[in-house]
Image (tube, rainbow, N blue to C red):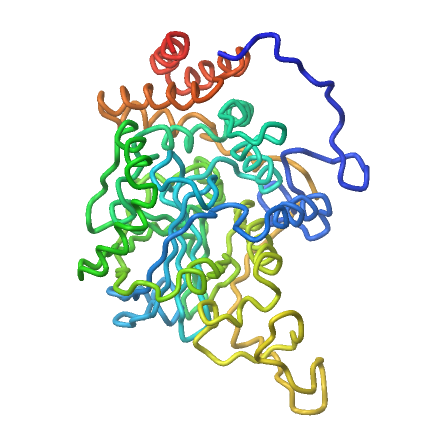
Length: 490
């Protein structure tokens, strides 16, 4: 345990960078409790834009990644659900995939306890379609206003430059919505054996529409065909010393041997009107949709069959953005998704440059006609006219061809959590995971993993340690007691 005499600094009110009082540390401004976020929320935009510019040149998050090329094949007819052309049965779409750890830097070992990014760029006939997910179906927070703070808690301390798990647990225990994801992370699922042996999820909810305009809410689940396999905590730590690039090597070598990894894409589908009165908020990224309510249906498969030729040009400069959507697919009111739709392209403009989509790895496989021009590293310069509207034959928008998917939005402008549904609770799904899904061995490993992580380095300050025990007690009384004993004995 850390010394109880650790000094506390005086607490001051949060401000923006110009000294104005911050309206909230946790909540973005939205149109009604469930509505989309507002561009007028200057404080949110400032937090995200500043956060995107904190590191040069490696990624702020997902810094260490591995990638491969392949294809997605639509194997089932989903035309009644979605009008996207790449989902037409039998269509094969080229894909680039990037897998990554989240909190660590470039030099971190692959097998550290961390979520794994699972990002796909599909070069469709209607432009790029990017899915930016993780190997877990949920996330730590539900509002983008807390995202930079969450990542700061995972990074190195500002004073010592050292990693400090006390900061992570301080943030998590003060953010009860993190309970589901933290429980997954502290299980053996937090240390997947290989990239090939983990699932991938959209985590966010998206909106699908068919040609007739009928709408459904959906979630994506890429289920590994190799089977899920995880390292124990001890095995993962041993591999950090044996081969810190183990995941990178395993993926590369498997493809080189002709053992091409594959995943089956399964979709959960919710009728559009179900969202209004479902028992919890279906757009809350800290929760899963129970499969007994919405069983997953297989619709296609992802196969990776080619290694990159140049790591920097293809893996390091790959730029994924959840705003890259194609006709038939739209965003939901998920607040984290709404924030990421701004944050991802913004960070790419800073890290790679404003013309990052002209790089071969990011360039769509369709013609591009845009009025954006100039800027660093332009190699497909625009020609006059470079403005719209114009009288000289420049491109013009075709709204009828865009196939935007409308839905009603109303409500007062607020900073708040989602509108409460009858079963909204930050601990209920983590509780079900611990009690109903995990085996006795899984629960034993969970307690050990929590203690090993919490006691890393100088360990936890006494107040944070107490809150860790309370946090897991809120999930399950026996789990909390076991965690408390493990922390005190450690």
